[in-house]
Image 1 (cartoon, rainbow, N blue to C red):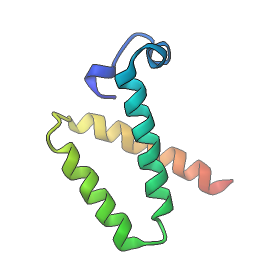
Image 2: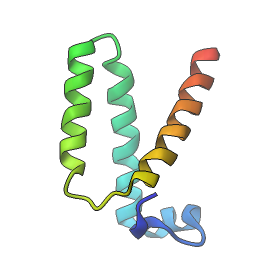
Image 3: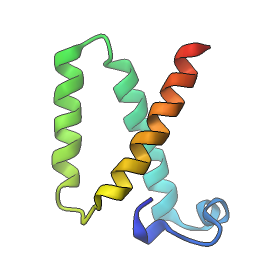
Length: 82
């Protein structure tokens, strides 16, 4: 999770923080776009490259991405097994 969104109660924070709520909506739209473009390999890669480009300006640490990767992999595996 991005440092500015690390709070004691992130669920409660969703109800009061417009910034966190907005980012959550953006994240869900990002996942929707990724899933929708799975059949279009070139489009999917282009989308991910652009997403990475937009995030280069952020001071992300490798550990943030590792945690996200594990979570996304688990969710994807679960969804594919349904």
